[in-house]
Amino acid sequence: MRWTHPFYGMQYPSDFIPLLEKNDLIYRADLKVFEDVCKFQKTILDSGNKPVPVSVNMSRYDIYRKDYVAEIEKLRTKYDVPVKYIHIEITESSAIGGMELISGVLKQLHEKGYIVEMDDFGSGYSSLNILKDLAVDVIKLDMRFLSGDIGGRGGTILNAVVQMAKWLGTPVIAEGVETMEQADYMKSIGCKYVQGYLYSKPVTAEEFREKLKQIDHEPLTPALDLITEMDAGRFWDPKSMETLIFNNFVGGAVIFTYQDEKIEILRVNKKYVKEIGMNMLEQEILESDLLEGMDEENRIVYKDTLARAINSNDEEVCETWREVCSKTCGKDAICIRSYIRLIGKTDNQYLFYAMVQNVTAEKKRWEELYKSERRFRFASEHANVYAWEYDISTKEMRPCFRCMRDLNLPPLVENYPEPAIEVGIFPPGLCG
Image (cartoon, rainbow, N blue to C red; front, side):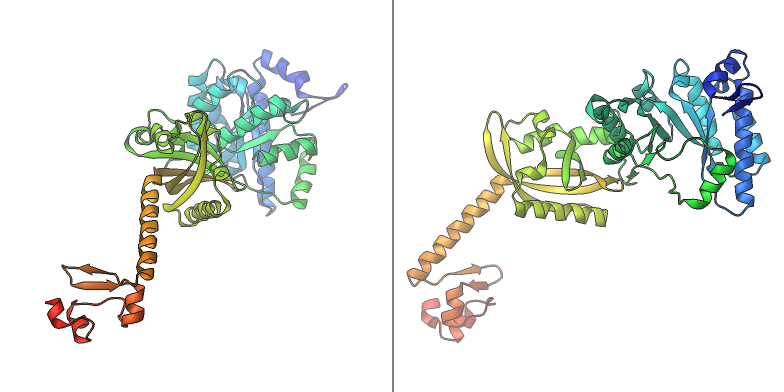
């Protein structure tokens, strides 16, 4: 919104909006802007070109007017513009002190089909409450977090907000981006959409129309597709059935993300901590990387299982050995059987749910049995002894390798011992 004054020239919003708000005229200015956007989108549609969505601000003064949503709907239908081409922006500050009221307005907008964006997110003091309580469709991050050096405390907060928004299924737009360094940083932490002076300063409607002809546009897509069979978001709701089951009615269970061949554990239940053993604390497990404790062979097995789970959208199973280390017990190798299922994904990040069983004791028993059998076979061969397995109920005999080699027996002898007697291996009197 700009005002070209006949004497003072170009006036910016900060120059005149406070005056409009003071005199209760801001809603009329907002309706004027909304109608101008409808007119603009209509001209794009009539010209045969494909429009892109344009976001229109809705001030807190508009929210307090009961008929505002009805007024903008009247304008949109007047110009016959599909609702998908107009987004509504509300500011974080407009929600302060009126959460119930703004929730009602959001419900009206959603019923009409509007995409609602939260503008200037992070500029106020109630950001996390708003993220929790308001069902906005898009979050627009205030880039004042990165007004200084890239990264640091502000970068850590931005990264956390982007990750939280992902698992809420809410796309994030970084606004106010002015440098390639800022843009690259936001993309590196998973923020796919960026706007700001780096790309363009505010332009007239005619200039914008020309820009639409010159560049390609990517439609806004959800940051996370949750697998419909399992609602991943509800694993963080302490009252949900998923959480109840996760904590009480399944064995050891873990939720983790997989991105760029790295795993980050997000949540484990008490039984998982017990299955891993080694007197490890939950915090130690959350800070560990599953793959780091595996050798190359086991890492390949685990990664292949994750790939199968992604492709099949079904439960996949694997057994892997890993080395775990606790402050109290030191290091040890354990074998974990994992039942893995994909429950969410973004472009390059995947959310998994896995149930685990510690099968180390079982594996060690089989290993001892295998070693014992090898020792027996070795001793038998050197003692010139023949051995075989015999099932009395089925009369099936499975000879050892030396039996098959020296006595010319097949791998399976049925109705034993009659065939052995017939070929003369055993004298009839001896077998009787």
